[in-house]
Length: 128
Image (cartoon, rainbow, N blue to C red; front, side):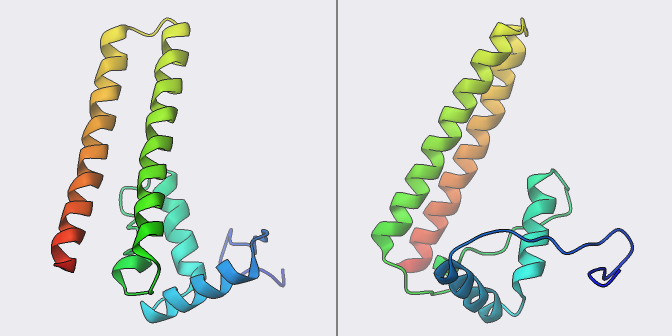
């Protein structure tokens, strides 16, 4: 096939804004990679591949974004994480999952949120 690059590989198309696509290209080029590699890495990470590594966020690579926007995005992502966690816990309760198992899951999620907070603290230290 014309779009294939390797066995089982195919070209995926999706919609985005031109500004985001351009910024994403600039950021990946500055990191010495490209959009495709970053998108594939993200998909591998998102689907649980333990070897997948997320790239360093552009705010740490000096993309010039307003720090207020960065803070807002971080807070919004934590709120989204907590809302998803709450919905998952309630759905698990509705399915009859043992409360201790749910609390173990919540505890694990809390550790992940704490780790994200530690990354923010490290970033703050790097900016000082």
